[in-house]
Image (spheres, rainbow, N blue to C red):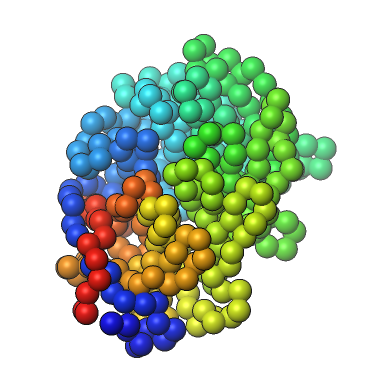
Length: 350
């Protein structure tokens, strides 16, 4: 049965089944790995979790860096190598790679990226699919730079066998968002500032050169498990596209103007997109759309209440039909954090 109180009806209620949950200290979102997840539970530690949300490894964060996502001048971005041997931590003026013992294998410093308001934002780095390379996106002082503004950026290729930089090339990346990585690790998505507002791009790398971008969505959010589609969005729209340039917009005709979305959408399966949205300032809930058409398929009916509304502002998935919700209680009390893993059970009258 549809819920017309939601304004434009998103369809029937779809029952969610709880698969597993864990009390994990959290101060930021949990991200998927190839065979598990990673979490930043405190300013001093990154955890690796298996699919059942059990802790399998811990990486200490050196005192030089502080993981504080609510404060842009002290934030860091994280990536975990696919072989789980290394974590790269990219801050506003320093980037380093550490192992589970806290040993720093590689390190570099730089002048910070800055946002449109002039505040420093962290850089970013990601590992190659075979863990043989680190791709570090590093701010550089170009000819138009000064003490307060970094004009350029480069992608450095760092060999993880000996931690030598083997290549450098110009990039459009400027630190506005995380980097979303295609399964082939050759296509990357990020947002950049075009002079007026953030704009999203998907780009490829060939022979250490950044290729012509495919535009789409202010904020790249996810890539389907088969690598065929990307997901992007803003607070007012959701976009699904492919890497040939074809896109589908949820709010193309303006029917969803009264809805507000969060940048917490993801591909739940090859046919399902999960989006956090709310109508007329009501509480956020998870809406399900068709991957092919962005037609509404329903909304998630959870069997239990969440501690607060923020639990439904984001979701993360392996595109395997399951997804995570996260209770992130705040930087000052991460010990109250909780992660739940869900699957669709069917429709209901709730």
